[in-house]
Length: 387
Image 1 (spheres, rainbow, N blue to C red):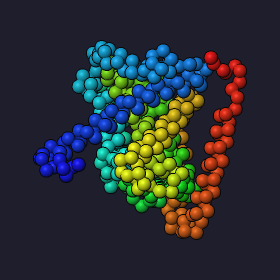
Image 2: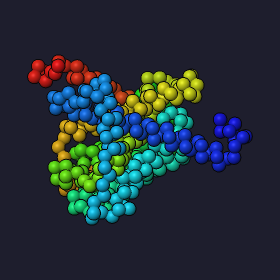
Image 3: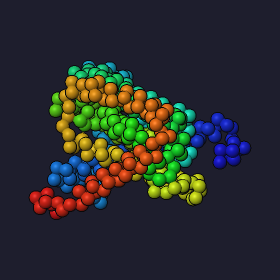
Image 4: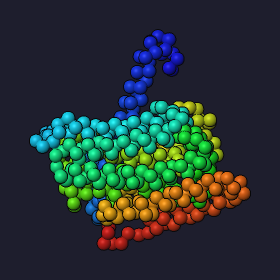
């Protein structure tokens, strides 16, 4: 298609048109997914608290998020007198752009990616980390002590948790030998025991540590110290309202999906189901195969997002000193040990006991998942039943 268009249009117009299409698709996906995740979080929190959640606007309350979005777009956009007008207005867009750029390098299938970068892992981590600049800027420019405290907390938290998160990413990089997310996904083709999470004990532990530190990077409870409603009113976005306030939430839910997709690509087989020994694009063609591939990775990522929601409504918020101690005293040494361990494994043990270890880890995970599934099928006590 690119070659056909290049015959009739200048090259820069073709590139600009393709970039516009890719950006529009990413923006549309971010908006729709954020609406659905907000609805899902309300439903999850309601069910965990023995409530019904939104039910009136649309079937099952599905249109409640859309109604709230329309309300936010029509609300008055105010700027505090003590705020720096330019920095105050640009901060939410800066946070949103950081999340938006991460989607450009995330593959949703075999070669189905906006920009297939050879250093895709590094790029995604770098741009996701830059979201903190929007949060810090919002806290500084608001002219409010509550916002400033939230921005400072987020800066300290991100600087700390970025280190163990990056150490966890090094583990699958050592296993695959590449920084390309597309290549990492291709290497996990086949049955689910070929996924990187089952490759060795160090990658198995690295997945869980990565998910915890990624949750902290998304400002999700129990690490939501940048907001901390019980302490800082609303934290860094206390003074925001209307459309700019909504951009912070688009950035947050976009980051949740981005880090979940990154976890899937690094550890959980990417766009592969784990129950087919072949690549779907080889059997169904590029478009139909990648359509199913996209559904698989979106489904996996959405499950991880739901786990983040479950954690939020299950655990209490930590104090700032507890958050920092957990990172520096536990997560950082564990991350260093994982990197050293996977290097030793790849050099000396992979060829000898690699297949047996992979089988044991995969089997144990299946048994654990089956146990969790059976526990969820137990009858609900009468006091918890709702009409």
